[in-house]
Length: 192
Image 1 (cartoon, rainbow, N blue to C red):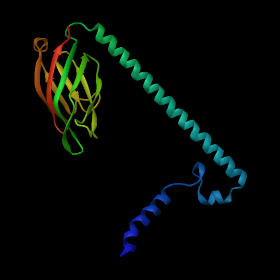
Image 2 (image 1 turned 120 degrees about the horizontal axis):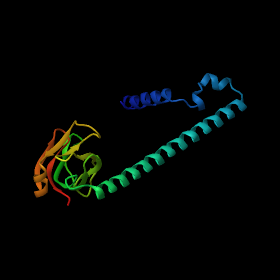
Image 3 (image 1 turned 45 degrees about the vertical axis):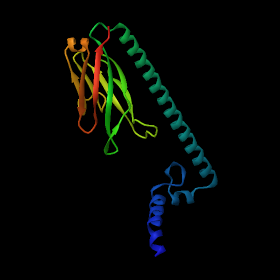
Image 4 (image 1 turned 90 degrees about the horizontal axis):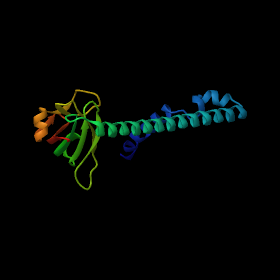
């Protein structure tokens, strides 16, 4: 009986061993065995150089992403400061639920500060002390509609709150729903 319990583990070990190469530069076992000690050392050095270059490339890409995020944040702050009346709206999403892990989960309330023409990513975090789940929501305002979408620059899976400028000036509050993504209460006002 115990031998049958170890068979899946043995199969997994065989598959994992067969999938990965143990030698640098993707050299096969037969090629490795045919190489001299000097060639093996050179192959390891070449692999180390390739690994170092890849790590440096990933670090540079991360640095460039962070710089772009800082630039976009600064641009957003400038746009917020220069926004004409009717171009900027502040909202609160409350009693929000997000569809995560195949069930609806209560999310913490979140404040949004939007300017027409600029999409902003916000993180929704599960409500409670042991919050394991979070998701991004991409928010945008076009002057008449606040959109909360699952995907960036997309019209798919979006909760929308349309309103006139007069509605937003007085303050507008509505339930919003995006199927299999988000539901909650959205309240928005224009910024004077």
